[in-house]
Amino acid sequence: MPAVAGDTEIGAGAVAALLGASAAGLVVRGARASADEWEQAGGTAAQAGRLRRRLAALAEENSSAYAEALTVLDPDAPAPDDGSSRDRRIAAALGQAAAVLTAIAEAAGDVAELACEAAPDCAAALRPDTLSAALFANAAAGAAVGLIEANLLAPSAGEALERARAASARAATALERTPFPAPERGG
Amino acid sequence: MSTSTDDASLVARCRAGDEAAWNLLVERYSRYVYAIAMRVYRLSESDAEDVFQEVFSRAFQHLPQLRDDAAVRPWLAQTTRRLAVDQLRRSGRVEPVGDGEDLDGAAGEPGEDVFAQLDEALSVREAMAALPESCREILDRFFARDESYRTIAATLDLSQVTIASRISRCLAKLRAELTGSGRNRDAGASS
Image (cartoon, rainbow over all chains, first blue to last red; front, top):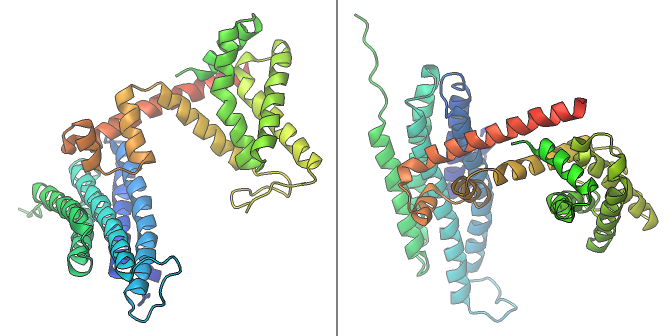
């Protein structure tokens, strides 16, 4: 993450994926720390670990898809060798970029749901971190939706957008069910 | 799970001339042998096929002399390694081909962790086979196919809020299978 923080070239989609991956890492940490007191800690850590790797890979995929979309959108770009029309290439590139962002939204949404499910059971010391993970993941899912809505409304992106919105909505619902605990007041 | 015990009984049945047991043994370990030959030593498919044939030919001949029936897997691994190296030498190559990114041993000999990974993968596969179909499916969808909770829930007609818990419970069963096989394997190796 320090490298990402200093990278002014990285796109918002990749940042969303890495934010989701980092959130998943927090869930892994919280679950591992709870292994002695929570039966499903190992399974939760394994799922969060898988989601973390998935999102890290999606950050790379997003960068590639974004670069391809920029290339085909460049009006000065040379005509393709295969004779395909520019419109068709643009539609394909935008569709692929939307698909990657949808995958980011869904994986980040899953992280948020997993974090919300883990928070009540994980070690008390790491509960705020796990709830923070849910907030981060929810933000990542929401950002992915926003990027599709703003940049990628290709004809093929309609279904992708619906799936991404649904994932973001589920993450938000999970968060509503599992708010940060109110601070304990000393007597 | 008791793979080593199963291996022991399987080897005993093979030794007694049980053809079905032999077929089961070959089926159980064919992917393992191919994985060593092709993924570790980067043999071509035809070279790996030659190694495969020779490994199981020798296994058939040497099963009666196997000192520990439960140790058939390490015996197969060792035999595959020797034959793969022989195949490399015959083909003029002295070390595994490919980019070598997962080969961290000395030149010509892959690191032990590569074999440990293959062993682990085989153990997981065997343990998965012992799980209920519902668990196999949900674990495969989440960990191998990278499907989202929503997709899994929709495909399997389950409530989405239960998916993570179901996966955790199935992982606990998988762990129990793996732990059981680990105990039995250790016991078999030391006997």
